[in-house]
Image (cartoon, rainbow, N blue to C red):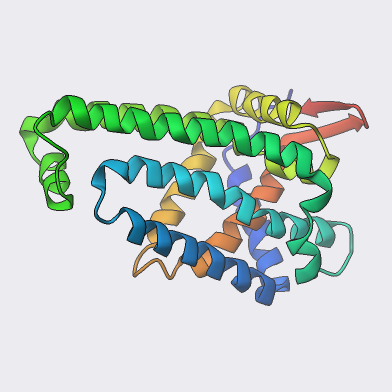
Length: 250
């Protein structure tokens, strides 16, 4: 294994930007899908602040699958083929079994995350779930430091699990038609082999997504496809194949 450097995530973003510029129509189509998903989730959970962590996990769950079409665009450009919206919309159909298994794993993690979030709220707010205003007051109230610490710790743990499982597994399935278990294990190995670089990559993703929500989440129209293309290059930069049945994590 050759460890990845801190400059690699910046190179992945640069390559992703080139892919977006090369096929802007396809990118904006998926960008609209990202924006619509975020808007719908915000509407659904606006009155249920205890599900904020579940909303975040839902984004982590659905986002990579929406990005699969973007992975296909980057893959075709890498092979010298013309990107096509139709091909990107159907790229998953030949990998249905592996994708379904990976979806199941991520759904289980998402449900556990949501349940853990509810438990944290129940422990610290035993008089009932607070309103949205109540949650904001609780977060910024110095007396609730323990609640904020536990809430972030629980959320961070599940976010790391979801991120480690999905960071390269979905593009790997698309590229090699690998089974879900092997793809997830390889993804976790990549994170364990390059913890600093992959955490830096995760931090970059988080920062860009937060910026994309200003204002009204419209930045997702551009940031969403940019990160989708960049994630393909993250996979290609982190996983090397020596033979059809063997991979080497770089």
